[in-house]
Amino acid sequence: MKKKIVIMILIVIWMGVVFSFSNQGATESSGVSGKVTERIVESLHITEGCNQEDAKIVLKNIENIVRKIAHFSIYTIGGILIYLELNLYNISDSKKIIYSQILGSLYASTDELHQLIIPGRSGEIRDVVIDSCGIFTGIIIILIILIMIEKIKNEIKIKKTIDK
Image (cartoon, rainbow, N blue to C red; front, side, top):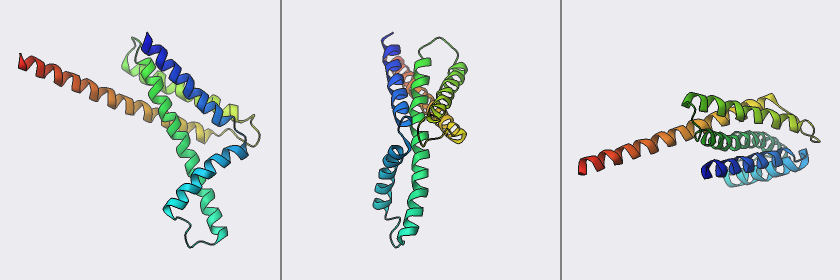
């Protein structure tokens, strides 16, 4: 019961973080991703030797990539958390995967709908697809981790049996 509550709290925090990013107006949102992009470009010297106009175009294109990676990454975390919560219930593994994907994708959809009412923002089907891919990746990551943990536990049991 304690695990269910802790993971649910983490899911609510994750949803709050997603909501707060989506609740930013276009200028504020672009400012955040713009700063990250500038740091990446500066550290990798990407615009070195470019004139100002070309550097702006490069920055804008990289910022778009940074924004999409952010979408994917934050929803990967969501996929992990949602699956972990469902893993605590007595349902089949295939249903855990399907329900996790559905719940995560539904939240991504409502997130994009939310952005429709934020000044300067838009809801993008492309972002729902990216978010849903992030959810799926999170599910795969946590499944691999859980399988590895189970394998280690079984190896320890076998070793203990042999040592007796």
